[in-house]
Length: 109
Image (cartoon, rainbow, N blue to C red; front, top):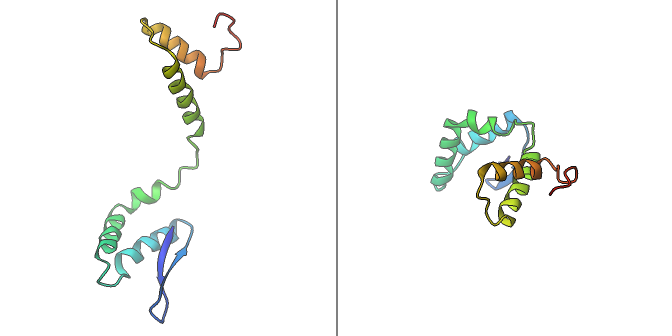
């Protein structure tokens, strides 16, 4: 998370900090440590502070959605090249074959 940090001389700079506690400190600094002219950032800080459990939980997934996106990409490509199946079961079968990369194993297609 990138946080605004204030030096003793009054100069603001952006500092990158990592970790859940650091992210919570960053949200707290947006909520309390801003000058009066930065009302929109202060409002953002208050909103993030109210929703901090949800915001911080979204960073601790630990899993990638890459494989799911790869399958979705294959299915979108299939939908684009098929000019229309009249039978839904055939379309579903074709999607399963395409997404499971079974084309090489089935000689009919």
